[in-house]
Length: 431
Image (cartoon, rainbow, N blue to C red; front, top):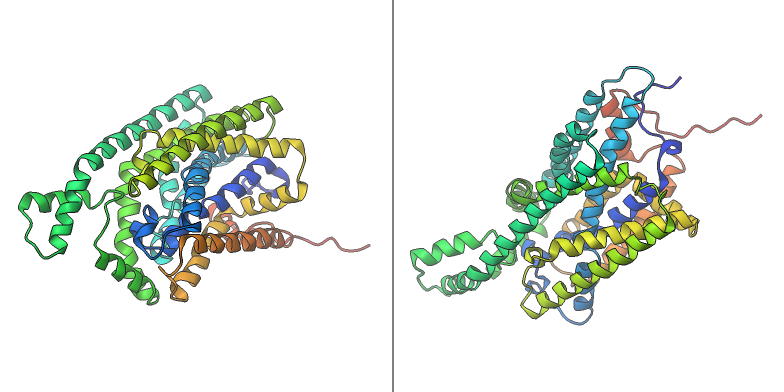
């Protein structure tokens, strides 16, 4: 008999969840690629570096209308679903299992992977550490009724939306004055104490452009090899992983995870609801989400890249789009069509941790190792994204045809369960 604390193997997995996770891990790169390949401030305003015209504008629109926020939302909801899936499976085991021990060990290991990715692998925008911190808070909620989980998740997300509105008002009221003061200081003129205080106050907010020499210094450091890039990455990683995470991103992830726990309990993620349910979910979600996202994106382009993340509509657009994508993917899984595509996406989703870290490694090789950081236009970064997609879509099924888990999934499970997991798929002997 197999150990009751063995990790989930392929025959026990829910294929639709793997397909959805595969879609999300690929989709999230469409947004992250500009942060990998361009300076920190250019993640919001790509016109700060090089040429931004023609195809660049089109790619920017596709990124922010179709992918921004929605892929992270799907990832977060699936993480919440995974909490219920893992703990319910362990609690249903025939022999006694230290469920809390397995869960917290697994979660702390995820935090460790995130710290390595953010600091040693230079991906300041890593979400694994953040997910691990949020995961520590979810265990006591695993048996709460789905309706209460949903209500709590909505309350947390409403708080985040309110915070966005307040920060947006602050940026609107003080941003222009701060930019004028910064330009005055950059010209060598003396600024008053009040103006300097305003510059300092606005410096950490999205959309507040840094001096040109700061952008140039970042490009130079990120193009000069690992050591200069490490020191340049350090303050960005701290700001993202500590300051921004504690103020906003942690609660954003937590709210979405609670929603995901409820949706899993209501069997939304296993493609078992009706075709009508998923069709309505896809149609309503995508119509509302893409319409809101399109309005935001166009307004941002018309207003010198005003940060969309601070619009009061931002959370409406991204959540509606995420739910629309979930409905669309579940429809595809339920229909039985595109079997080969679903198999490839499921393999990519089963190796989500490996593929997420692999994106960091490949981007580091291209932008830091080859010294190409800050050298690509936005539409060229889109081509890099497509190349990485192609690699991961080919690599994932190739690997899983030979091994039971992805490389990092194997390591994660071995450390979680306290024993080395069998990795290679056993080949049946002839005769």
